[in-house]
Image 1 (tube, rainbow, N blue to C red):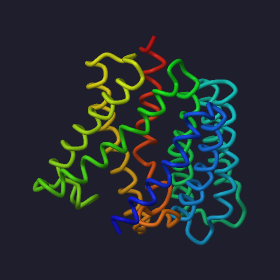
Image 2 (image 1 turned 60 degrees about the vertical axis):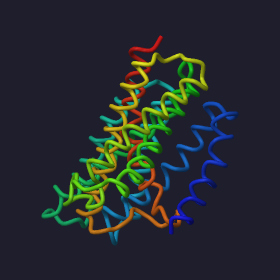
Image 3 (image 1 turned 90 degrees about the horizontal axis):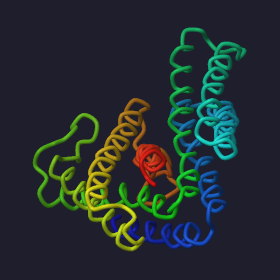
Image 4 (image 1 turned 180 degrees about the vertical axis):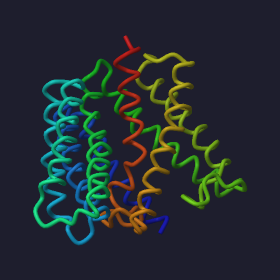
Length: 266
C-alpha cells in the first residue's frame, strides 16, 4: 500500500508541477475547477447519501458562482458571492418540495458547511496571481505535504502520545512535532530556490503556524468522515482515498497564506 501511495503521489506531481510552473494562473484555475468538481461530488456523497445528485448540482452552481466572482472581482467579491450562496442554500432547503421538515436543520447545516468549506479552494488562483505567485502556490502545497510526510515518519518512529485518539487514533504529538519541523524545512527550501523573498524568521513562523493549521484541516475532515460514517471521502486515488482526503489540509493553509501574502508581503 505504501508503494501504491508513493506511485500515485509521484504521478500527481509529474502532472501538477509542470502545469503550475509553466501554465500560470489559467493552469491553476483549470486544476482547481477540476479538483473542485470531484471534491463537491465526494462531499455530496458523504453528506447526502441516497440523494447526492441534487445536492451536488446545487453545490456546483453555488461554489461555481463563488469561484467566478473571486476570479473576476477578487476576495471581496468572492465573499459577497459566498454570502449570497449561503442565503440561497437556506432557500433551497426551505423551498425544496418533498423534503421532510424534521431533517431541515441538519440538511441546511450540511449544505452550508460544504459550501463554505469547499469554497476555500477558490483562493489558490489568487495566490498564483500575486507578486511572487509561484512561490506562494508552492508554499501552499509544500507546507501540508511536508507536514504530512514528517508527521508520518516521526509518528511511526517516535510516536507514543496520542494527539486526538477519538478523531484520528494514529496521530501523535511526536508526529505533530515532526510535521512542523519538516514543514519549516520545506519553506526554507522554497525560499532558497525562489531567491530569498521571505526572511528566515518569516519562513520559520509561516512553516510552523501553517503546518499546525494543516493538522487542524486534516482533523476537521476526520471529524466529518466519522460523523458521516465513512472511512474515505472517495476512491479515485489508490492508496490515498479521494481528492478531498488529499487536500483537506490545503483548504486551511491556502486562505491563511493568502491573507498573509496579500496583507504583509511587499
